[in-house]
Length: 158
Ligand SMILES: CC(C)(COP(=O)(O)OP(=O)(O)OC[C@H]1O[C@@H](n2cnc3c(N)ncnc32)[C@H](O)[C@@H]1OP(=O)(O)O)[C@@H](O)C(=O)NCCC(=O)NCCS
Image (tube, rainbow, N blue to C red):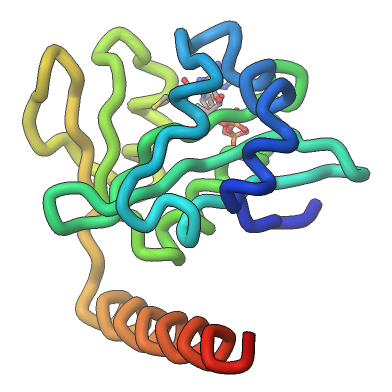
């Protein structure tokens, strides 16, 4: 299992597979996958297994926090722990919020088990939020600084 950065170039060349992964539960089409959002192309990632994409997570900055826009595991690969790996990676990257359909009881339980709690509703969706401990918040800050530095160096040397 490998985590790969979901850049715009990656999304453009794998749009069909990304849509296939979400096709049974989401109405997303190519324009939703490729839509530009703040920080989306530096925060999002996919997970591959033996070279095939089995999951992806789209993250962007929304209302000042990093938000999970989409977290999907391919139907053939669900309930085998991949969602747990993906959600932990999203939280490690600083994601704090997501919205879920209130009828999606399985997903809500899954998120609650991983430390997210209900924090209101928005357009009929349940908003869930991850509350970091002080130590986790400190780590995220350190990660964020190194992220900026690494990108700064990359930009300078590009
Ligand atoms: C929700 C989802 C991301 C979890 O990923 P996963 O790889 O199946 O998760 P894991 O194997 O790590 O954990 C399994 C848990 O997820 C829950 N789950 C939620 N929806 C599920 C589904 N459609 N299929 C299987 N498990 C699901 C199960 O209840 C299970 O919990 P349990 O151990 O208490 O039974 C994944 O099932 C999925 O992509 N579902 C469809 C899309 C979706 O609902 N996304 C969330 C919308 S915000």
